[in-house]
Length: 315
Image (cartoon, rainbow, N blue to C red):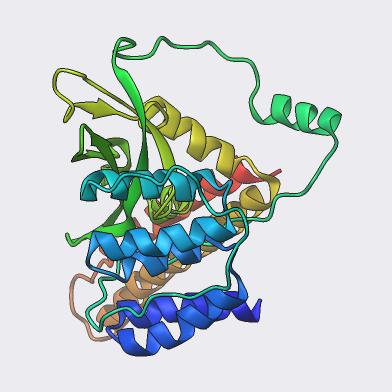
């Protein structure tokens, strides 16, 4: 856990502009954890030149020769640089020697740690798969004639739209290469401002920087592309599956209960202030009183929405 904290701390320092300090923390972490692919991906992004990124990922593959994520990233970078892959890879990993990065290191996003996978028997895995993915009507894919390739998520972060009421959405995009040229596809369904903060965080955690996604593109116009799992229906299904987990339902129920109590306090406070104004004005012999309708209306809305959410997620 201490090592993971060191990795996250180094990335936070990069985002804060303390890049030289972050490098001193990140590189010892990789030497101690050479099989952490996310750490290697981040190390590669510290280099502005693609040629240097290729060198870092080649060292990564020496220690992780069967990792598909590192292979896809290296293929994209080699294609962009015009570098041909060697005919044979060295099977035995060498000691970890990380190239020295320059002081100007671009930061992309904060690392998100995935949950550990628990080994289970095949029968149990099949049962869990049926429970997690019940049989459903399969919709035909859009543009089945398009070509397929693999892309790498190169930007994944929670964005905020500053309005009177802040709105949040997930800004996610993936890069892919066709005929040596770079293209990008946006996760449009994740950019809806109607998404609450939690929905945006779920999507960013599901598709962190460096994650691989399957992309289908128009061979005649490679810039036109779609990701089947990024379609609106799939996005709704992903969010629903996440929120149906027992621990998440419990957390959401508790969150809506707090919202309900907050709304009740606002409504009661507005009503009490209105009654107090009536008593004060009558004592002073002044006709009329002040109605704190804004507090009452706001509190009533928060209370009702919190009550609905609490009952919805209550087991």
